[in-house]
Amino acid sequence: MDGGAAVIMTTVPTTEDAARLAGLLLDERLAACVQELPITSHFRWEGRARREPEILLLIKSARDRAAEAAARVESAHPYEIPEVLVLEATGAGAAYLAWLTAETRPPASGA
Image 1 (cartoon, rainbow, N blue to C red):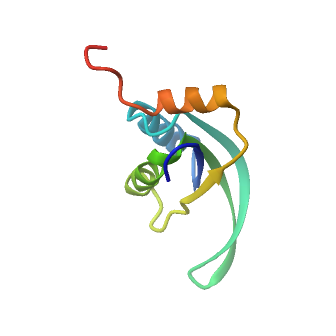
Image 2 (image 1 turned 180 degrees about the vertical axis):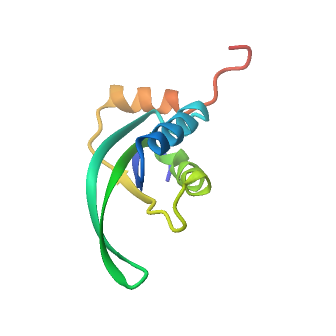
């Protein structure tokens, strides 16, 4: 996935987990922006239907960094089997893509 933008979606159990994961991705420049939204998830787990409050994270990254960002989410995630979905984003404006790309690159040496 090179050029363009991607959105990585995951859910976590608490706002503390959301803040920790968002900070990690921003610090490692794997994401330019992470949004957190409180949601209620309905799913099957261990043979029964569940309904749980969760925090949905929408992680915006450059498309060529999305696989690395998704792998980092999985490695740092508190769930045994985390939901990590990578969606190709289309229709983003040129200025937004330039910002997104710049924010997901290591800083220039000496910076």
